[in-house]
Amino acid sequence: MNDTPSRLPLNRTTILLLVIALAVIWFVPLGWRHLIPSDEGRYAEMAREMLVTGDWITPRYNAYKYFEKPPLQTWANALTFAWFGIGEWQARLYTALTGFAGVLLIGFTGARVFNAATGVFAAVVLASSPYWNLMGHFNTLDMGLSFWMELTLCALLLAQRPNLPSSSARLWMWVCWISMALAVLSKGLIGVILPGAVLVIYTLVARDWALWKRLYLVSGLILFFAVATPWFVLVQQRNPEFLNFFFIVQQFDRYLTPEQNRPGPIYYFAAVMLVGFLPWLSVAVQSVRHALRMPRQPNGFSPALVMLVWSTFIFVFFSVSHSKLVSYTLPIAPPLALLIGMYLPLVPRATFRRHLAGYAVFFVVAAFGAMFLYWAGDARNPNALYREFQLWVYAALGVAFVLTLVALWINRRSRAGIFGATATFGLAWLLFGTIGGTGHEVFGRLSSGAPIAPAIKAAIAKLPPDTPFYSVDVLDHTLPFYIDHTMIMVQHADELAFGISVEPQKWVPTVEAWIPRWEADRYALALMSPARYDQLLAQHVPMQVVVRDPRRVIVEKPQP
Image (tube, rainbow, N blue to C red):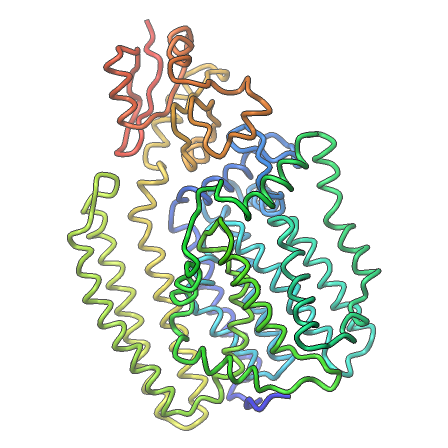
């Protein structure tokens, strides 16, 4: 099946220690950074509101109905808040768990479908790729979606192994169907459309018609709908407007039209993948060639071809979309890691030495490039922040460079040193991403609004519980989470337009309409930009500043 060397100089104890070391590096930094806009603040605040209100069916954001995405991650985050309290690391825990589990899953699948060497190398590749590592440490929906889609793919590969007992094959296919349902509950129809399209394309390309007889379609569909359907039924019963907005506007219009204002050129995701798999680019093409040469299993199934079709189709699918975000193609990272993991043990030592030497030079060049951070800066992010971040960048580059030199030294040893060199090089990139990502806190601290949150909470505590808090012509994605308080939108609906349209009484349509309301309020608070504050001050609107930073001003209604 595979000519990759199957034996490694590792035992179960060593592998366990490696997993523990990865877990420490992966989970410890979760609380070292503040939440940043927009995704991290949005999904943390949605979970906080779900926990506080006790409404687990109708997702809300800033107290407005929010049906852009299904609730699986919001449920998980709300449960995490209930168990461990509300905070940054708790908000990122589900994302980090799915990212970490994805590394272990691709290693397990590689070992079972191919051999132990493939599994271990694939896990190293995925953990060290900046795409997977960084996305696994931000509270976004795409990591959770990618894990459930990865489980869908891996369960299919595991179920189609030759000579597998029918009971085991059926169990793995049930896992496949259930994970597709959880992918749907993570982000909608793409959780089933993408795997379904891959399956159809694979069977057309490979002419593997017999595969359909081994999918357990009837029992699998029953499990799929049993898991995916209940929430959709319940939320539609409570919110008659749900189905049209969720399926038509969010699932189809989002893909087919530029309404979301997330444009990008056709090559957008090519750049994403180049940066996301930067440590392994020199072996990427060879890995694909190796996969294309692999023979099929005795039952006619080709795991390598399935992974190639999966990666290619999802890449093309999002490349032609009118809506693009960096994280959209994340589901192709696990199969790409497995394809590279299949080839890495075959790389000659001399070739791998050139690979490592090239990346050592890369880190030196990147260090020279980082000098330009010394002069960067603007009104929103002052130069002092860039200079502070520059120190983190140099620390990350320095650690990565030293570990790459260690990998070069290990590679000079016997053939058995290939895993040690690969693991050390992988550690270099894992720490590079971890240190650099942690250093982004110099910007995240300001953008989160957390430093001014204590002063705002102190002001809220002095006022009656029903005091209105307005958000004037701006939607701040992180501040509501840090002050434990929702806001009344004024003029700028932003992504809350749908929620406002079904509950228009919860907002003020213009600043001009808000001013007399503000003047009539006995007590009130408001959030606004510094520019808007200056405009209102010039209009002699009565305001008393509670606290401010370079991006926002918090005011309260002056008392007689």
